[in-house]
Image 1 (cartoon, rainbow, N blue to C red):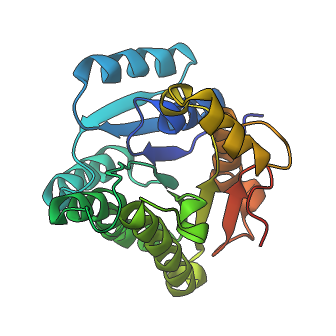
Image 2: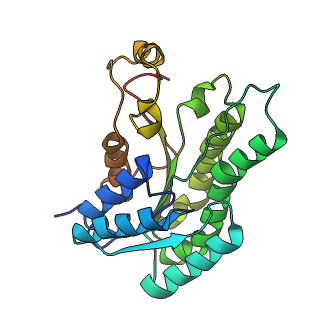
Length: 249
């Protein structure tokens, strides 16, 4: 039995990295996967083909995570077609790193808009229907940087920390309707971005990881499968780190 058989799922920012792995693992586990992307139509089509290759139903929407009107239109279309949504993974995110004294207003606002405001927009757009159906799981992809902070990433850290407070508040508001909300906080995960790091920078990161290796995107995706499945039916309001022990609360 596949863990997500028959479930309708939405993954934002799914054409690369962690988002793509989540979409693929959801498809392998039997879910219908609806995903969003911002710019690359070619990558979206390729991902759709990959997901259907697993035997899953797959559908993509070109919509900016920070576009409230576009997200609401997408939600209305999804509910009209599928009737309900069982799990939403808010994964879309960007970085605009800079030291605070040099950080521009645009760098601050673009990161907050994409990383944090998008969570509010997605939740607002999908929540009413989920409340009526009395089912649903919100899985918000934050970062250990939202817990520890990081020099040169005040905007990113603020957006990811804000996501944690938002998710805990949401969990308290909607728990009585059988809707859950949790945070996944990846640490140092091997992606295209980390592949470009100088060896000395990589060694510095690994020094602080008890498991002495970077994680991979499947480590994050497997946790998201668990949180989207009925196996996590009594888990809500939690921050679950996928970091090899780098951050120990």
